[in-house]
Image (cartoon, rainbow, N blue to C red; front, side, top):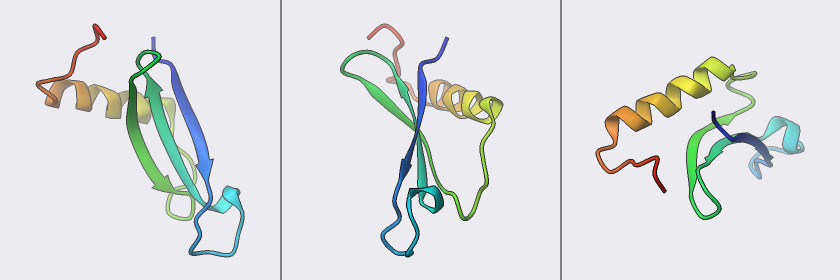
Length: 71
């Protein structure tokens, strides 16, 4: 399974709070390793599905020769 988190980050270019800012989606691989999966603006995309997150992680794993799940 995946330990994935979504964090809201304020966009300093617009005069709105975190809810209109950026979304960072990251996967916790271990206590010391984090994979940044996606970053997107809430103004450009309303939400992202679990399937889209899983697809992004799978694409990273298949395209990165140095990727190891045995951290």
